[in-house]
Each structure stands twice: as structure tokens, then as C-alpha cells.
Length: 91
Image 1 (cartoon, one colour):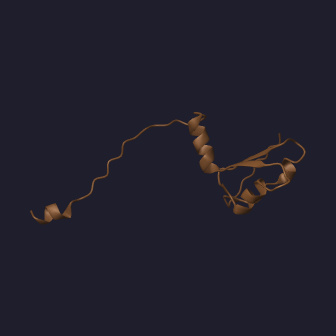
Image 2 (cartoon, rainbow, N blue to C red; image 1 turned 90 degrees about the vertical axis):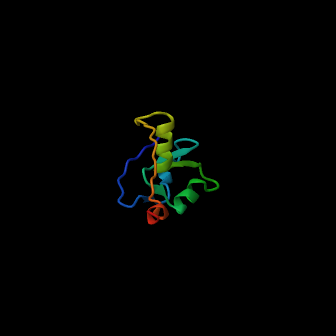
Image 3 (cartoon, rainbow, N blue to C red; image 1 turned 135 degrees about the vertical axis):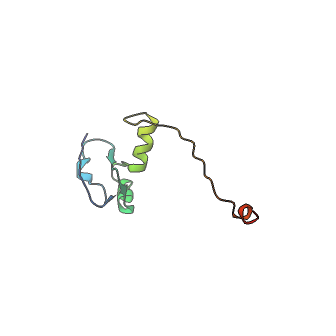
């Protein structure tokens, strides 16, 4: 298993770095708190190369919530109230 941690100012990731997974297994996994570019998604499923699962920030949050890992979930009820101008126009 290979792992890498990097910090980017641009949250859209470029193509996965295959050298981190080549020869180390049948499949790769890259996780980012940002998102993956179209080129990265294409490279992750390129024919003839081991597949790479990509988990972006939205999916990561979904998984953390689903498996209750490091997150606390609170259910809230939100009520929207709007002024009925027609009602007050008659007063």
C-alpha cells in the first residue's frame, strides 16, 4: 500500500500519480478533500492500467458520516418564514 499526503492551493487534483501504485497491487486508492479533474478521472480508469478508486471531498464526507468516523451528526428542523405583503397591504 502506498500513501501520500500533499497540500494544494488548487483543490482540483490533476491525474493520479501512477508511480505510487504501480507494482504494489491490483488497485489504487486516492483520497482528496478537494475534487478530481476530468483528466484524473480518465486516468483512474484507463484501459491497460490498474484501476484507481478516487474519493473526493464530498464522497469522503458521506463515508465518514455513514460509518460514524470522526463526525457528530445533529438533525435540525429549519422553518422558513416569509412576509405576506398582500395581507399587510389590506390592513
